[in-house]
Image (cartoon, rainbow, N blue to C red; front, side):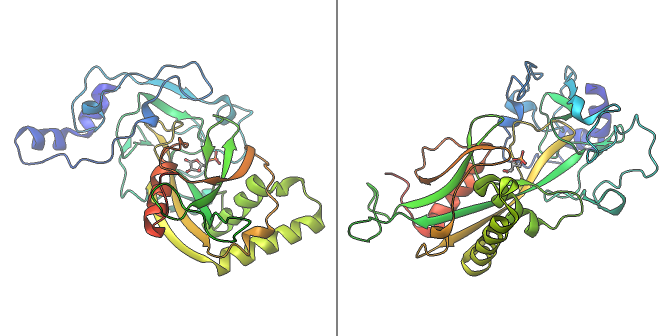
Length: 315
Ligand code: RP5
């Protein structure tokens, strides 16, 4: 496998040697190199920081191969990609494009990704594992992450509480993920043919308000509350790009759009009846502080939100 990559990046490698090119450092993915691979006992091929960029020669590189049985063979989930390039298909995938035959956005927020052996190559570099791992699609697997916040109110004085740094304390709705038991933003994968803005509300309803198990009448009420909140409160896009997700592989990776929604006087979110559902085993309002250990790089975006709001990071 190592030689394949060297061939693909031959021009870049030559330019590097000749001093005609410099490696533009991208944030190093770490969780995407962690072992054992999520929900398995598999050890990824070890990749030191210096060998992460594909342009750096690493002839010994032999990533292990893994694709969840959910995504290959006769029992594969209907939504998942075919087992490119081994499976006969009517439509070849349109990498780096909107792929209407599959109802998928195969474009990356990171720019044009390379194709090796007919499958996409992770734009952030080596991960020590090839195949699709636990991800259903080759290349970018798009998600969306709503960061929902309010101020922490003192019930007696009805004033905003402050942290040790004397700044106002921001509270966030976070879920506990079933797969890793880690705290995370209640985000989720964009389904085929679904608009990202629709996914955001659907995933929030499913994970933070257990909408999948509500009666039709309750569902209507919950959807109205979410619609009302998401359309009226302050909102700002915080991040669009690669996620340092532990499920990432050399050929499949997570990308997201993280958007912040803030309810300044708390009147909308007050109506939310939080109850964990779908992939979440817990959901609560949490006081934000910078020591929180969150899934993937969710902590980076929330830290940005706290900076934007001049909220407390120490309480
Ligand atoms: C992360 O995985 C994204 O930031 C998003 O929070 C999540 C989507 O995957 P599922 O929760 O649907 O598994 O990379």
